[in-house]
Image (tube, rainbow, N blue to C red; front, side, top):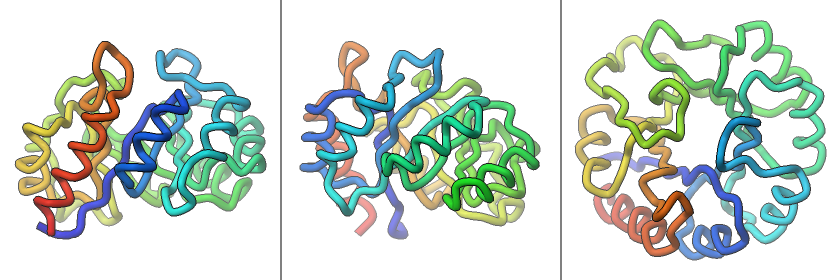
Length: 200
């Protein structure tokens, strides 16, 4: 396997930060979407970011958000990448990149849903963060012209077959490292160590 990156999404507590600081994934995600149970406010996200290892890249997850709010969070130094998980248009994405100077990951449920102005694509089930498996079989890499994250129901039992089948730039997990709907330190560390041991 190639050197697949790892993203742990939906961190909301200082103990989550302690866990990823130990596990050392490549990316973590803070969810700012209003309807998400993993939503964090700016004050909380700033505290979490201040305690995060400097070599882990922070991603902010938004759904059809006001660009000015995204800019506020970027200016606060909380995130380095913007992830859009709604119905954002090509013009919206271009505007966000121009406004913030940060790269954008745009979610897509299928190949027809990709946005060309995004820097990265994230293939996920509609809604995201549900724990439901994404149908990896629909992805034809010859039709994907940029790095992509693979999400949607990933866990320690299926991640290797998903990587082998799709060869993504990165895998993105949230529910798969939770117990009772909260991030589980043991599962985070096990998942990162397992994926790294399998792709070396």
